[in-house]
Image (tube, rainbow, N blue to C red; front, side, top):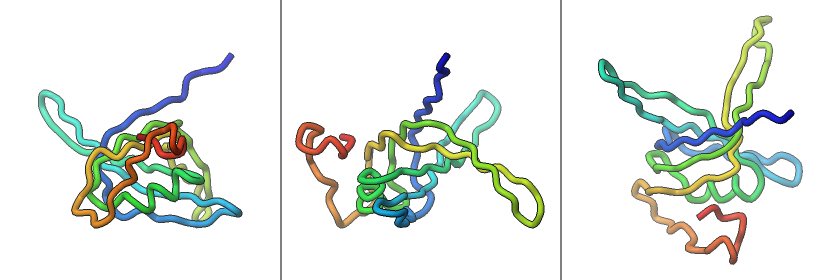
Length: 122
């Protein structure tokens, strides 16, 4: 039996995208702030996001701090040990990233359709 592991968020980048090579590909790590409001209070949740391959390269090229994005993907929890203490880190592994706005960006995002380049999630 397969369970559903699917998450969707809309938020703004809290800092610049960090792009790192991994073998013949790359990984982009970034964090988005997702605001919420209830009857009595409001706040922000910080969501860690990782994108891989061509999607990672596109994110690193066009996303900047303050950009609003839609992120869809799977939740993943990593376990690691730091100073002898087991710790956990939860992130979203992005399958789809859509650029909703830009924050004073000099470069224009590509205006390609999925038929022209299926790796560009527009």
